[in-house]
Length: 241
Image 1 (cartoon, rainbow, N blue to C red):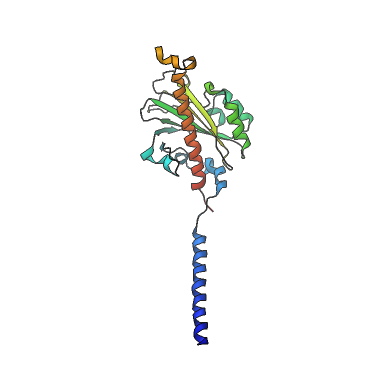
Image 2 (cartoon, rainbow, N blue to C red):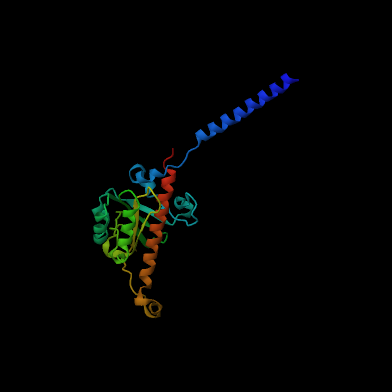
């Protein structure tokens, strides 16, 4: 009888040991996000990953921003040039360089109507949270300055995209650690139309007749916010440990 009990306990020990070994093995196969990868996104991710073919969607789930089913903006081209002085306008550039700008990555997108284009800039700042936030704060009140130098893309709807057609802009900083980026966007009309006061009674409901311009600024801010979320997605998708 004693031998049977000892044998039964031995079997339980073997089963328990096997379960622990399996659990340990399963844990060893897990991939955990490496947040420090955020600092390397701009050098390690392919350009068409940083600037996906489409971006849109607002339900916040991982990956939905680049899901073509929810796509809103469609990419037209990516700039091969990354110096800060190639991608930013005068006052924004001065602030960025003062704070240690390392590079500016740009791409141009078009909205579903084919009437609005936008150039998005990923501004690479020194590591940490201070400099990117200072740049965003310095941009407050400079919206009419434009922030991003428009990127024309030959042979596309953005073929003629240039400075006189800038109608709205926005600039935000990424949140959290290990994402040393500020995101800026400038919007404009495909046909080069400059935004201005609405005609007649429509303008009376808005101070200084800014109704037309406000929609362009709103789109720029929304697009910059999408890319802020996209960089956060890349931080936790691109590398593991």
